[in-house]
Each structure stands twice: as structure tokens, then as C-alpha cells.
Image 1: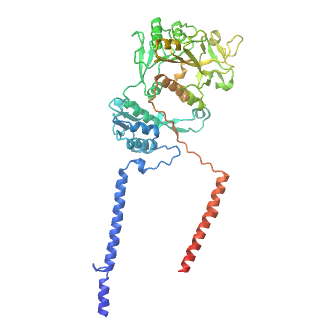
Image 2: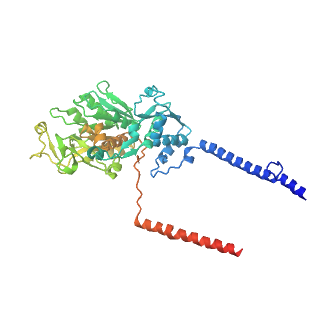
Length: 502
């Protein structure tokens, strides 16, 4: 008997390969190895999944998630696109919003490839694309490329408060809009084209303004009507920015002919004290408007900037291309602007609409008053309200003529006239208000019919505060102080009773 017990004991020893303890231990070890293997395999599988399945965007404004418009663009994408991310590993963490967003683009389409290029390791890489020190992304296809600047991705939303009152800057993140439009730009077969008139001392466009135009997926090219007789047929919009000298008769006729054929134009005019510009004015008069003599002074302090009479904030009117700005209560800055007058004898086919309007307290100063610096209102000064920007449409032929000719495809001309070239002054965008830029961009889009461009609102980087009312506090106090403890107590009583019955 003792011998059998000893044998049984030896059999159950951990050192016995046939004992129960060994078998149980082996089984446990195998399960542990199996569980570890499953975890490793799952990690490997998950690491290969797109980030949209593995990373949850818990930000209130969906900072790291592409929206519906972007998804629609990427779904129909059939051209390969490379996004070069010009950062080192440290900057990748600094610009976490961009880092995660470009990964979302790559995950959403097999045609997009994101490639990091450290400027320190590849110092000459960006130069082939004319990249600057603030260029963050180069979006490229076989058709063309586009640069996305760091300062356009992260923008200050409270310009006036920061620059005038020293408040802390609040940043917006505009990454999705810029990247989506860049992808659209480099993959579009045909881009609308804007020509900028040159040769008469026009105000030159700086890179910021040109960037606004190209951001809307519109190409820009200079045009001299002194060298060629007509406006090119591929011109979707002609931009004329405050010529210092008058157009010659040939140029004026070429512009009017282009507009009569259904062309479009944005025209800016600056006040000239001693210069007459009849040919320039003839273009405007052909479309029912002219420029009043003088510079607008605003008599209402509520509509001026820094209490300067010529620094005015006119009222923005709601039109097809301004409704979003009006609903957002945008303020457009128009310093040293002229008044635009609608002619009584304009053609019936022409429709002139107010775009920017002063208050009734505004008045005009001209000639010697301006050169001497006199700004107070005098007797005889023309009184407001004045239009300082207008939008013009012309069907070119009347409805009766269209019916008689059977021409249902009437060429519709569009013009926007601003009373100052300051609407395209980039320094205003950064120091006073960004809405001059927004209005100009909207006008360009209206001209060029950029239906294919994408408009995605910027997302605020400032953390949103959660407001909890007294009602919320009382409701959750009832849940945590009364309801949950009662549930636990009742559950405990039920468990005890059931155990006692067994």
C-alpha cells in the first residue's frame, strides 16, 4: 500500500513527464504561448490597417478626419499624386495636425502617396519646386505641382484683437481645405485662367494675392494689350488693377470687345488728382457706371478705422458670391476709396448691384481739399451713401432680341468694380482684416465659375469649453449618489438571498 502511494506520488511529481501536474502545466504554458501569439499577430495586423480604423478622432471639430467633400474628391481620383512632407521627425510631432491629416489622405486613396523629406537631409529637394523656408507640403502629379505654406495652414483668426489690443492669438487650422484644393489643382485637366493687364503702370500683384488666386485653382498670366490686339480667347477673367496712366484707345476697345463676347473682369481704380483717364472710364461707362471725382470720407465713427475718415468699413451687401461673408458679419476695409456712380442711361440689359456701401454720413473730398489735407465736411461736398464697389451683369442682348434670334445661350458678362486698389493690398489682410482677401477670392470664383474648387471651413485649434448647467449637475448627482449605489445595494441583497437558499 505504501509502495503504491509512493509510486503515485512519483507519478504526480512536476519532474515526471507523465504526471498530472506536468500535463496541467504544459497545457497552461501552451495557452499562454497561444495568447501571446494572438496578441502579436493582432498587433501586426492592426499596424497594417489604415489609420481611420485604428485611430479615433475625439476632437470636437474632427481635426484629424477628412470630411465629405474631401472623400468625394478622393473617391473619384484616378491620377497618382505625391505629397512631399518637408519636415524632420521633431517637426512632425510639432505639426501633429498635419501629420495625422496627410496620413488620412493616403489611407483614403490608393492614388495618394505621402513621402517625408527632411530639409536638413535633402537641402536641395525643395528648390526644384521653388519651395521656401515656410513651405510645408509639395503636392505633385504628372500635370503640375502646388506648394502649401505653413502660414496658410495655421492662421490667426483674431487679427484685429492681436495687433491692436495685444490679445493672445487664436489659431485656425486650414489644412484639409488647402490639401484638398492642392490635390484638385494638380489633377484637374483644364484650369480657369486669369490674365492681369500690364503696360500702364498698374499696381503689381504680390505673391500673397497670386496665391489667393491659385488657391482657387485658377492659373495667372500677365497680359499686355500694347503687344497684342485682343484679349486671349482662353481668358476666363481679366484683372485690371488701378492703371497709373490712361489706356490707349486700342486697349479700351479690345477690353470692351472681350466683355461684349461674354468676358469677365475685375477692375480697381485709384484716385488721380491731376490725371484724366477717359479711355479707362470708357470701359466702365460701357457697362453703366463711372467713377465720381473725389475720395470718400466717412462721417460715422462706427464705420471708420482708427477714427480716420478715409479708413472706412462699408456695409457688405448680400449677393450670390457674398452671402457667406454677410452671414458671418464680415467687415471689409476700403481705405482711400472712390465712389462708383451708376449711369442713368445705361443699357437695359445691364444690371448694376451695390456690393459695398457707405453710411449716409459719408461725403466726398477732391482736388485742393485733398492735397491740402482738409478732411472736414464742407458745404457743397457730395453726400452719401455711396457705392464703393459694385457687381455688374450683362446678358448682352435683351430678352426680346434673344427670342427673335432664337439664341438661348446668351453670353453673360460679369464685372466687379472696386473704388480702390487696396482691396488687393496684402498688408491689409495681415494687419487689419482677412475679409478683404475673402471678398476678392469670392469675386474671382464668381468670375471663373470655379465649381470644381473645394470650400472647407477652417477648424479652430483653441480648445472648446464644456458648459455644465445646474440642471446637468443635479441630474448626474442623482445618478452617482443615489441611483448607482441603490443598484449595487439591491444586487448585493439578491446575491446574498440566492446563496442562503442553496
